[in-house]
Image (tube, rainbow, N blue to C red):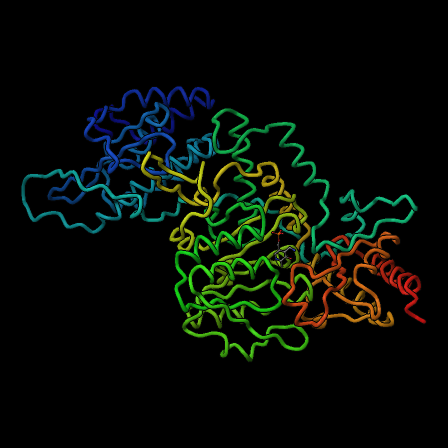
Length: 599
Ligand code: PMP
């Protein structure tokens, strides 16, 4: 029962909602309900009673009622917005007068679904609603199992101390997982490669010379399928607005689309909650976020960070920087001669001083795929966290962060057939909650005063400012596209192209391939041609329409290890074919001729 309100059950309230049918009318009804909510005293509308995570100001005052039959909890609450007051009435109708145990068993999310609130409320308001649920559950949790005083008569009502948001018990509703958004692929099917290729417009161009483009630089940045291009365009043409701000229709739609994308990404990488999926500009920023927000807070003098020479500068330099700031020490896990992590050397590099193993999921030069589960097990055995640089691995193989015990995973949208300027960082909830914020400003705060600020809940805590909105939405479409094809067919296609390329390239005179055999690598081959500068090779291949990257590929320590200043890299995406390999081989013979390497 809601004090001061007419006695109404949740069934009656649901019937009224059903009767009204239209959201417009239901919204009016919520306002009417809210108008009946009794006011609080000014002395009660204080910080201690405030519920954080709501856009409006909301205050909750719990009262625990004890009598001979047991303990029940009642709430008085009020906000500064009338629709929110209406939502408070819904919540109090659900919770008031129940025992702590009954409150904890209450299916809040199910009721919101039945009332249509799940689909009608804009995400900020929905988050606010769940913040109130969390407050109610935290108070119930704090009073669970409370024995009523041993009295035979009489009863007592106590205004109990409010539970702060820091004590909030994570509920099954917070960061609730949404409905499946990812298509399920038929793993037994092989890739219809011509159909796949037809979806990538940029693959179908010819140069002025009449030569067809052969794109072999997906490790640098992949081409985009039409559905991703269309999605970004749809955002601008149909409902563009800033996200998480406006309650008007475009603002609402854009926020929903973003959350849909976040949910697809969550499923794609196997995270438990969308709260753990943070939009970032890409892998580099994701790793910098962890280095600064986790590293600067938790690393101390003498703590060790374990890296290896395969790593991209993005997974070396932030750690060097943070080590310099904190006094932590960097250790390098040795490589075998063929460019794999030397697992026999694990005891030399891992110890109780190891705080973090930061490792690539797939080398962007050698294609090496380290045995992550073995490495994670070894790291966990010494109490270390594991960060995976997924820039290259996430587009090519399934990622299951929760199942595999990955603590942080950073990846880039542009290598995943999605837009540039957007990527993701996964972090385990407890870690993200314990970390400092990284960038500060709008959206990442809960309260700001002249004297300071408090931070917003996840994931907003790490999403300061305006996101690259259209790109983030289109990234969701990109992961749906890959999921639709399925990693089984994609991986076996890419590996067969890789094996073919490996065999053919080894027959080109003077061509040296770096790194492990095809059983231990993804679809990347870096090589040199004896007697030819990498840049000349790449330039001449372009004449034949073959687009490859050359240089150190942001891996100077690895190139030092290989003993060459630069390599040429052919990298394959899900759209490349054995025919592309044939074109590359012909073009390599052309390069050899042009550079007179035979003579
Ligand atoms: N790590 C690896 C393994 C990469 O290949 C790259 C991109 N070349 C990065 C990190 C950096 O990614 P981004 O430039 O998208 O931040």
